[in-house]
Image (cartoon, rainbow, N blue to C red):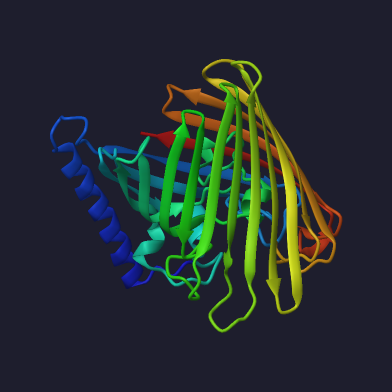
Length: 370
């Protein structure tokens, strides 16, 4: 269980109080849109059933929909944002088991609880009058890597891909510079403390690059890169890099396709560890309220390093089908069936651990937005 002693409770209470005060302050500001602070948020909950009924009551190889056969609060988020004209900011305050995973809080991690772990993002934005406008963000922000994001409502499927869970980081702390060379071409440079860190564990900074190009109104190409040393000070090796490639295509107004491919490696004393994978997505919208989405992917973890399983020659595949329905644009309901298959018996069945090659799950998720 998560330690909810007096200090964490006070810290969480302080965060909520501060957020509510900021909301009240924002609402009391001038009606001038250039000075307004936008307030939004959502509450996201789900129920997941694993048909193998593992004794651990967890879905293996998942990152956010881990608890199974339980009604779970996935994420509750409040967002405060002021558009940079030329100075602005954004702050996302998060609670829930998804946030616990992102921040590495027990039971899914070992990082001690602190007020900062409830801040998914908090950064200052300045638009510098240089050329087409250079945007500088300083603080803590979510990663530029990957096609999917932390908020399930902004993805096509409810559960996250293997690539999102195991191939890339969640967030960074540092500096982000974005420059639009044209309406359809922009480049962003990141100088950050590292992967999923607020305080760096070494003296080196990690570099990130995001290049976005749209050759047409219906096609998008994105190349993301991360490179840096991620091992603690005193370790002579630890160079880690990831290449992330995304292609989006709107075939029609109702039908869209996406491809996401990743390659990563890290050098340790014991040698070079690599991981790679590809995910293909399709979504068809019947109308403004309902849609179906399908995702299929392959993830290769030859030494079991990225997943932390230590299984030699590990290869995992998954296919996910999702149906969604929106009620008045404020309530999103999703039903999802997913099957994971590995070339090694890494899944559980009942009390039997690591005896199954496959895992079948069904999930119902609901998101209320404001």
